[in-house]
Length: 377
Ligand SMILES: *[C@@H]1O[C@H](CO)[C@@H](O)[C@H](O)[C@H]1NC(C)=O
Picture 1: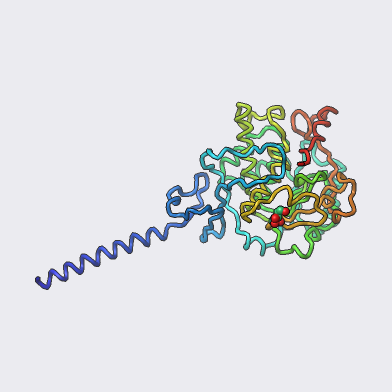
Picture 2 (picture 1 turned 45 degrees about the vertical axis):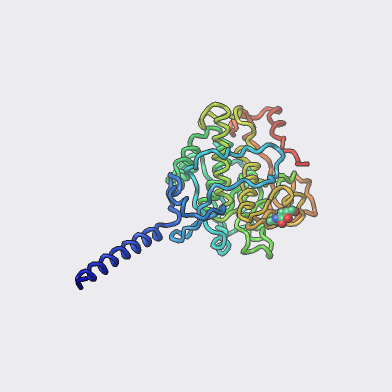
């Protein structure tokens, strides 16, 4: 064979080899997950991801993690049937990026208190409550939203998540909005959310016992009946998977409620909603957080883990305080359930037909409000 033929053959082989190398390096350079706001994360990645269930896939470029749809582990803490979304639902468009655990534990809780005033502004009781926060936390930044500034905040923070923004803006019932708003704030900025009918009794920096410092990313307190976390006061670092899970849970249940009532989100009223507590309130938050902790730990975490607590317990990175912490008054001022941190006065102005703060509640509705999810057997 002529010498030039060898050259040609070698050249051809070289071409093929480099082509192969080029195509394989192209494939490798595709990020494992793209942060696609408003769309579902890269469908073409499904064939390159391992077949074992992956709960979190990190995107090293962004230093944040996306939570995939979580399997729903059992048991959940409440005895009532779970309003969990049907598994056949298409991938939702609002998955929120979250910070990985190890990054969060090294960061501090933002020293900021978030609150929201009703349509009548801040009354004297609320003013005294605000003073209690300032007295015990002289360095705390503090913001009280109005309806208008809260709307603006959500528009600014959730512009890239149109589903979430639309849902918030579509909600007509004030308590549903207020419930949703606190989760949106705790996710976006973190810090302490507190309703205005809450008095602070202990500096926030003393809330986490020394053995749990640098280990907790979310702090919640049990309500007096012990079956759910209070949502009147919650502390979180920004972008935690657990608060993201709460937002997604609320999005799902609102959609389900609307579907059940044969309406759309903006058509939901206090009458069409099964129970506010379950849909957007403390029970929803509790279920979502326990589910997310459970998914991350890969073991069931539920009612047994939070029942009858006398000491704070750390579930993964969620610190659960016994009921004296946030609900001492409702719990009859127990002396064996840890220190009293905040006091909730149950102004409960949302407990009326309109789920709002501007219509006085009738005694019947007040009674309905006293109803709490029953203690699981
Ligand atoms: C939750 O409770 C179960 C059963 O008591 C226990 O095995 C498990 O370790 C607990 N999980 C956590 C995170 O404490």
